[in-house]
Length: 119
Image (cartoon, rainbow, N blue to C red; front, side, top):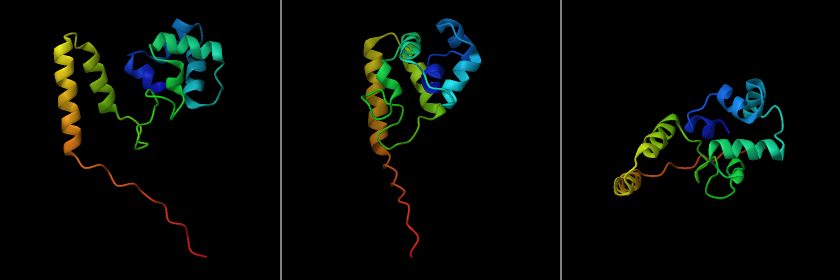
């Protein structure tokens, strides 16, 4: 939830005011201290402009984790914000093509495999 709130450029207080909660409650939701009811989750997703299933890892395209299981970094958030400001469809397409091509130039990180202790 924090990722989508940050990408939307909202503080916890701003999100809370929009959905009729306190910022402390939003903070608890983001930390996982409290469960989110379906009705509140629906209001949050509408405010942030994402599908409800975006909040469930490994569900659909909008999952919080990438295929590598790596959480999005601050740079990715900044890139997403800048991309959203691009209005020209041709420019958006060109930027997307460039980023995808550059991404293919970098070798994928090797997975870390935990070894079990012998015995």
